[in-house]
Image (cartoon, rainbow, N blue to C red; front, top):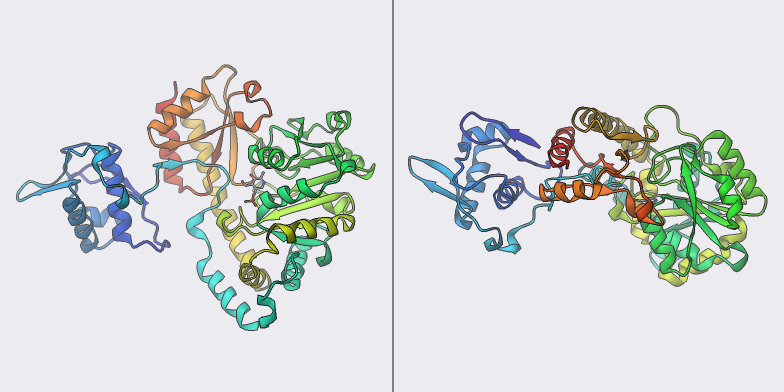
Length: 461
Ligand SMILES: Cc1ncc(COP(=O)(O)O)c(C=O)c1O
């Protein structure tokens, strides 16, 4: 991304993703078209010369000439000999929809996404090529619904090494993300494993998936030490869905005393579903190991590549207490007969080659810088916001003073093409939620973060 700041034309924020498959000239044309349609480039504005814009963006002049010609042909720009290129008067609705491939938002703080432009495409392709060459044809049939043995062994090694999980490949079931794990569990849990509780606030999608699959979760409060285990014990729940390493959404880490209490609660005949969704990212200290390592017979461990590689992959896993393997294996088999073998092959090879660890090491550094950029921008532009939780993950939660009209801020920011999500939907009763925002930072560059927070401050009621 670059901001064109020439003396001979307007400043315009253009995002060019050099790793994307989409050619740069199309990205540039899309970016300019969006800027014109959303009013960021006003009618009659004089555009920078092709030479100057090319220099600002670090691209060839030919590429800018092509993008300008395309937009002149579409009626977004006017080119007159002697007076350069200007923005035409364009009715937003008159622009054809099919040519609009740009993103809806100028800055999107959507929580939960890793840096999608950094997906290790080359390493993934290499891993798939090598893995596919090595695998026997029989593995491409309807295979074991739990997943390929090689994939389960590689995941076992990884989880033992990095999360202290007591894993056994026989007790792993691969699934399409934590979301499917929760759906399968909802269907497989028996009467004496219910009712199920979840953290309040908690991930709104999980509450919906549970209800959709016939489980209405009890709400157990969360404070600055994480899940309130005393309240859990009083609730009568037999199973709890929890995020101990980095509570979703508040970002707090379950305190040592609460960890001990939760393990004791589990050992007393209950089940914990440990959603370890973004534990790979802890920036201030070494991560706390998974709770599963302390009570493997009472904890169902969930992991996913949605924060480490890309949510679009839909690769996740469950490490199950042995007693639950049969029911979940059946549930997975009946759902889809097993996860994509092709993806398992590539992911296995990425794990065993060290490519996954390398990618994570690189991403950790990048996300820490982005998190720091977000903290600095919030401190400067929105000092009324308090950041909650530990330095971890790919999003943070900002709490605003009681009574702050957060819905107005979200709406006004959206009108400026800045997307932020309110905290309220994470609460079992959104009406009781304190004013707050969830801000994803991993999929934004530092300059987008700074520009986005400055825009939020301008939108603030
Ligand atoms: C709390 C929580 N758990 C798990 C996930 C990952 O879900 P999945 O693996 O289905 O993409 C997310 C993603 O946003 C999340 O926020």
